[in-house]
Image (cartoon, rainbow, N blue to C red; front, top):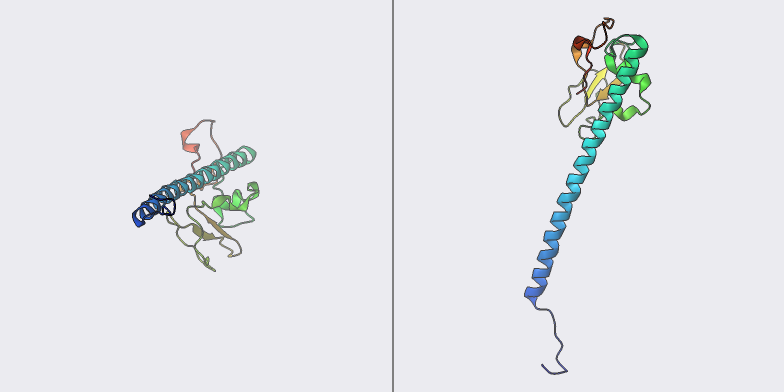
Length: 157
């Protein structure tokens, strides 16, 4: 090679370099996607913890389950009773299962794994929506029996 000749990249070298960059980008995007999913799971678990703490606070203050209907929010069930304990109003929504837009103007809508449920109070004034459930057999006005009774166990899912 003489001093006047310039060394350039061949087409094969450029294609190999571009292919390597594409493979690295695909690996990076997969990692970022899994981190986002993990963050959503942590957020959902945090919401369940906050709902559980609010439920226990309600139970200790009122000597009954959070599943009892609040007079101010008829038909709201546990969402109505825990409403005053939730400082963050989005606590009922998991980022993995948001509210289907637009929400229904009336009537209830069933939730799925990727979509939140919607429930209106019986007076049709307040809409609740969420991605979590509270075991329905606790929707009674029964008082707590002795402490530690398994029938009185509260469960969020």
